[in-house]
Image (tube, rainbow, N blue to C red; front, top):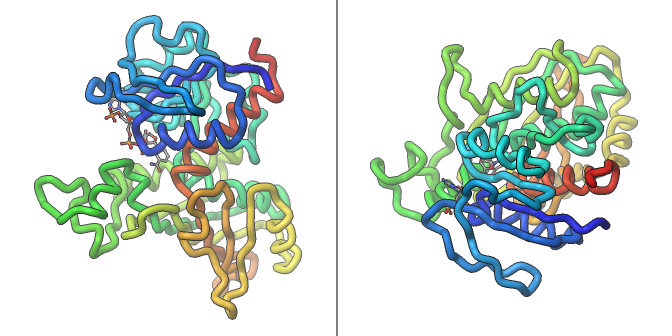
Length: 330
Ligand SMILES: NC(=O)c1ccc[n+]([C@@H]2O[C@H](COP(=O)([O-])OP(=O)(O)OC[C@H]3O[C@@H](n4cnc5c(N)ncnc54)[C@H](OP(=O)(O)O)[C@@H]3O)[C@@H](O)[C@H]2O)c1
């Protein structure tokens, strides 16, 4: 594999640190490596493949010579620095929501739409819950044409970054905790801010991003996103209604045979997708597969995936690997 110079923005965060683990695991051939975070972290040592690197602050020319800049910080930081990185010669893969719905920016899950990256210098990584849902939904849409989707999510605290994990460990304090209620003791039916229609931004992300990735403006989608007292790996219960009828055994086989999907569906043996099964790997685990009782062309399923890996860092590294292996970046 061609040697690549890589920059990570947000290298001290949950996603940023996971980038390094996955780049190593995926045997990406790294030349220069530059790690950026906030002023608070400047000078901190990070060891990667036996070598020491030191956290730097973002500044003019900091992306010169870089092939890929992987952003895992805030949306505002991506808005401020992504164009600079591109002008200085890098391809940017951004984990924030800043660019996802921009018409010129592809929103990519490699199993579904890697081709959308062709000729693009800025690529957006979708929302974590959306990524794990569109992998099976793209397969089912191609075969049975999706008419409607209803999402209900069970999202782990790590989805909110370091501050979310901290809340699970610490005593609740109304003034200091990140979540508005004690997440150790309750589920919270809010992720991100509420909008005028009563949905949250997270729910809008799932609706809009699903349509963009599946290249289908007409699918009707609704979503309810819930934060749950689980450390890592998001769960999503999906009800999907197709235009075509389906054979449930065949559908199960089609999902089982697909890259990145593991069907775990023997409820009588307590085998179904629990959160912990997904931790520390890049599979999407699917179970509780059954026919809907309201609409005969409907299907119910439940899936889990590691939100920091496939929901963020691994998906971005897979995009980078896909570009290195399939497109000329010289
Ligand atoms: N966690 C997930 O499951 C997940 C999934 C999908 C997408 N994402 C997205 O990925 C991004 C990172 O999430 P995370 O969970 O890794 O958050 P996090 O753990 O809170 O980490 C945030 C990172 O941003 C850095 N940062 C903050 N202010 C900065 C500044 N002014 N200049 C440079 N770096 C700065 C932090 O550096 P310091 O350590 O110095 O503060 C830290 O490295 C977010 O946009 C998030 O929405 C997260």
